[in-house]
Image (cartoon, rainbow over all chains, first blue to last red; front, side, top):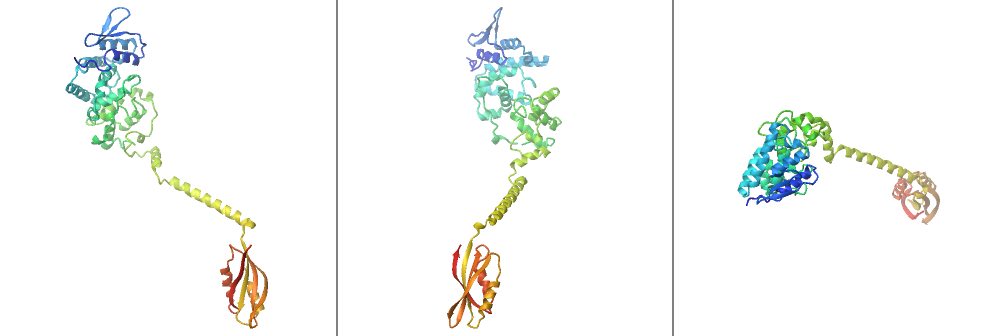
Length: 180
Length: 224
C-alpha cells in the first residue's frame, strides 16, 4: 500500500481547504476504497470523486477563481501541478522516490516564488498540504539542501489561514553552510 | 543591516544570499520594503544570482500595485541581513550608528554639561556655607614670645607682634611674664579662624622679627 495515508491527505485536507477558503462547513466527505479517495456527496445530483476535482469545486464555490489561475496559461499550470500532486507526490513512499521529488521541486522553484510563478494558487495550497508530512520529516541538512522548497514551504505556511492546526515547520538558515 | 551598494556585485551577492530562504525582503507578503530594495537594484540581477533574480522578477510583477503594497519605506540600510554593516551612508542611517556608538559625542557633551552644573551647585553651596558665621571654627591661642635677652625692648616686640595682620586673626590682651634673670616673655592672646590662620603661619611671621624674637611657643590652644 502506498503512502496515501499521510497525516493530512484526502478527507482531512479538504476540511482544511474549506476553512482556508472561508467556506462554511456543510460538505460531507467520505473516503472511498483502499486508497481513501475522497468523495463529496452533493446535496443534489451526483457525487464528486477525487481530491483535485473536489478542491477545484470548493474554490469555485468560494468564488475565489483567481486561485485556479488568472490567465489560460496559469490555469493550465495549476492543473499540471494538481495532477503532479496526486500522481507523483502522493504515490511516493520510499525515501529514494521522495528524494527525487524534492530534487525536482527544488530546481523548479529556484526561479519561482509560487508554483505558477508570481501568483498564489490552489497548486500551492494542495502541494503544501501534500508535502507537509514529508517536509516535517526532513533533517536540518536536508532542508538546507532543498533550499528552494524550504523557502517556498516556509512562505506558504505563513500565508494567512492556510496552515491552521498543522505544525509549523522550523527552517533555520545554517550559517555554517553558507559559503558566500 | 543593509546590503551595501546594490549596484555593486558585492551588494547583489548579499541580496542573493539573503533571499535564498526568503520570498520577500520582509515577512511573507510583498511590501514597501521590497519596493525600496527593488528600486535600489534598478536592473535585473545576473542569472547566476538566481535568488535575487527570482525575487526581482516577482516584485516586478507587482509593478502596477507598487503604491498599494503595505508598509512604509525605510532607509535602505534598514533592510537585509542584520550581521552586515550598513554602508549606504544615507543621512537617515546615521541614527543607526549613534545607537551603537558607545563613545558618542552626545554623551560627552552631556557629561560636560552635568559637570558644569555640578560645579555651579558646589560653588553655590560653598558660598552659602561660608556665609554662615556659626559654622566658622575658631580657636583661642595663648602665645609665648621669648626675647633674646633682658635688653630687648619688650614694648617694641609687642608692637611688632601686633603689627601682624591677617584675615581671621584678632589680637587680644597681653602681659609680660618674668622668666628669670630680669628677662620677661610676652604672653599674648589671640583668636584665629582655624581655616584661615594656622599656628605655623603665626610662628613664621612672629619669628620673622628676629631682632627681637628668639622663639615662640603656643602655650595654650582652645577651640571655641
